[in-house]
Image (cartoon, rainbow, N blue to C red; front, side, top):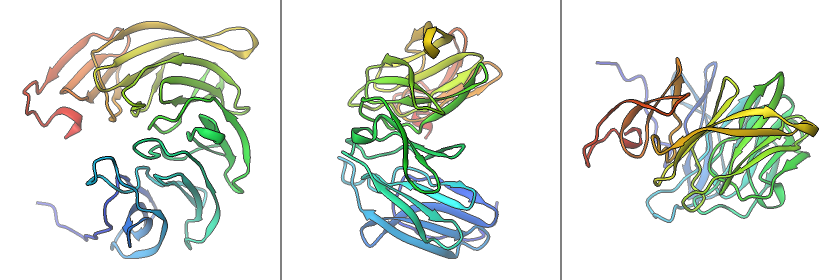
Length: 291
């Protein structure tokens, strides 16, 4: 078997890891607070840590901790806490460079990570911050905000269409696209959800946008096109319940979507929605939700 190099208990959190060189950034819980940790990736030693926001709990009292994964960019680390505090740290020292507070908190906490797009740090927060908002990544000053829908649980998703950059926000009950430079909303579509649980990241490919939700709502692909005044249109290519991604994002590979949704392990054709194969249909299968 594999040799264990190190192990460290950081307390509960849903965060994954950002690894840059010999540094590893993630979140945990310390003294009943959400905390960010910088570890030596080779030894597991704590380089710096900061308990930055009160501990938050899911409606299920056993599910608590920071939801988002830290984002590293150009010597800085960004984290959006579950309650709504957005902080930029010096990645080497752990000193705070700037921080802001957003709210109100969605039912299961802010879950999307910070997207760095050029000089912008972009988050989906709702309220006074807008469905999407872009901040100066070095100062935290607001640059633009877009949309009025409450946030969902997905990280803002960037893509290029016809040589122009756009940001997609998967929100409480809708999908919006914003011009990455200006924040102008260029497309919006209603997309119902269970209590705002739109959490899987959208996927853009070959001029088409894929979105998927769990709790039986299903998925769809929409072909984008230019309209007047820099707006976009989104024509439905297909829509079905072939995939029902509650929180896990599919992997697109050679025209197929591979995922373990809320039912089982599946392969679905991106362009048609046809199920190519599926595995794990047992009621007690551990292939659903990627487990």
